[in-house]
Image (cartoon, rainbow, N blue to C red):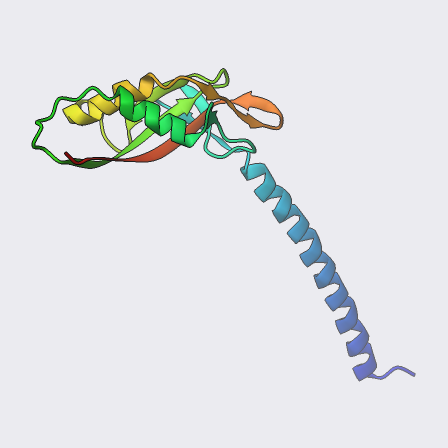
Length: 156
């Protein structure tokens, strides 16, 4: 004969197993949901394209980051006095499209009409660095929005 205590323990055991199964199933679906969010794109108003922020293979400048920075600095056309020590930090944002072209260059967080002459010179130089390898997601080339901080220091 089963007592009320034994029946309660069996019921509690069944409920515990049900809860465990429910937690496992919920966890599996949560992981799938997060996996799907990694493929999220957003609309970029400047380029009028859907862009990824993070992809499996991020865009790379052909020759590497050091070559990119060297070419960028060499292309900056900005007149400053011989006695000036120009030291600045510029945060730029741009899209590398699925063909490896740099498009939509801008100063991060600024309207284009609010850019200084120096920032405009940096953008002009940035647009000359067009030797990119496109980013890839699921083996396919995609548009990727990049944000880079460039520190420029010229001491004479």
